[in-house]
Image 1: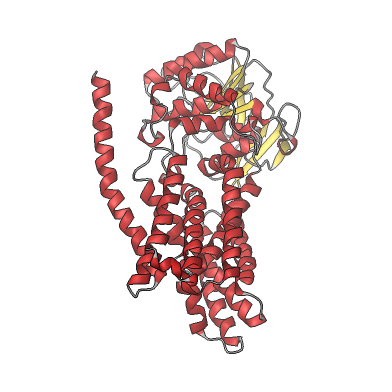
Image 2 (image 1 turned 30 degrees about the horizontal axis):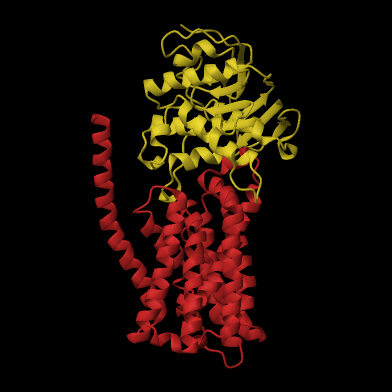
Amino acid sequence: MNGGQVDLDHRPVLRGIDLSIEPGEAVAVLGANGSGKSTLIRALLGLVPLSGGETFLYGRAPARFREWWRIGYVPQRLSVGGGVPTTIREVVASGRIARQRRLRPTRAADREATGRALAAVGMAHRASDPVQALSGGQQQRVLIARALAGEPDTFVMDEPTAGVDAESQTLLAETLSTLVDQGKTVLLVAHELGPLEPLITRAVVLRDGYVCHDGRPPRAVGTHALPGHDHVHPHGEEEPVSPLDWRPTS
Amino acid sequence: MIELLRFDFMQRALIAALLVGLAAPAIGTFMVQRRLALLGDGIGHVALTGVALGFLTGTAPVLTAVVVSILGAVAIELVRARGRTSGDVALALLFYGGIAGGVLLISLAPGGSNATLMSYLFGSISSVAVEDVWVIGLLAVAVLGVVTVFGRELYVLCQDEEVAKASGLPVRFLSLLIAVTAALTVVIAMRVVGLLLVSALMVVPVATSQQLTRGFVSTMLLSMLFGMISTVGGLTSSFYVEVPPGAIIVIVALTGFVLALGLGRFVRRSRSQEFSHEQQA
């Protein structure tokens, strides 16, 4: 992304972001609530329109990008729309969609990938249960399995650890480190890294819509170590924050 | 039961009822999943203007209803996609515009009155002609074809629009496809249950079957079965008891829902007991 800017409801959320993710990296986007983390990764994928700057996926603008199977997007929550029941297997199998063609039936390769993804998150024994019956952490595992089923090169995850029990977090860390070892690219948004910390190779810290740190993951001291943790967003005139004025707080 | 098949009009009515009972819940499942359960109602209101336009211009009301309701559905979809907060108000405006437009246009039509609209508002399945059966059949095939060909993509879209976008699906096209398919369904169901009750056939069988099922596909298939039972059952009983078919079809569907509600609670309870036993073992 070059000079990426995003406005939501006429309020600037991202104010000029230059960011490029190389293949094989494990990047965490960190920052306080409302710092624009989720918006950043959605804007990188072209899911949120940019009001300035440009973004490229494997060198192409999102509108011209055709190889969507290379990207596995994991949203923050599983939306259980309208109350129509749907099984875990159905949700996970839908992760194959970018690799399937219209008018072609589901193939054995699709079913195998779905089975592997279910097993990887430890949900194979519950595959025919409705997702509505799952806890938040289990639903998160289903979402990750959906991305795994598509066998992408790059995983883009929006707060995969938020509201997730410790067991699911550890499982997520194991799954991700396997992916990183396989040379996959991981880009995730997190409030706290927790058990994910050892596998993150690079951290991007956002503050007020700017990147204020890009490099090695900052050492977390307690839960309040991240910059701007208690920062309340002012609504009036703001002094521009230099991208360089970040300092570790302790 | 056999005796009513001796009547030609009843044969035609039964075929129409069967097709509508099959097609309406199929697309209805996607609409309910997408929280657009009332989309059918909105299109139904707009379709009334189309029917009146047909009378006014002397063309077949079914054709004008198809055109106007597709336009209405596209308008509703555009409003939904653009605005977030004022979406439901904008929809409401369209509903009232549809009804008012229909009543106004029919009064301008030669010899037209609100009574002309009644058979479209509440259905008149016993007056279905052979050509109507053909039109209903073609449209039903189109609706089921859309669901078969695009089902996988529509499922992802209705679950989460951003994920659909990040999977490279043509989100705008698929959204319009749902709206247009819903519009076609409204028009074919119009003759069977009437515009005011069209949405019931898209929503009630789905609500019924989701009490009993675990999966999306099973919900859709079961709701199509419930849809057919309601339309054929309602039509048959209206043959023996002098009641309007549209109303009795919807009442049959609602009765099924109430029964499924009780049964579903029972099924879920025994299922959760089964699960807790498994965990203890």
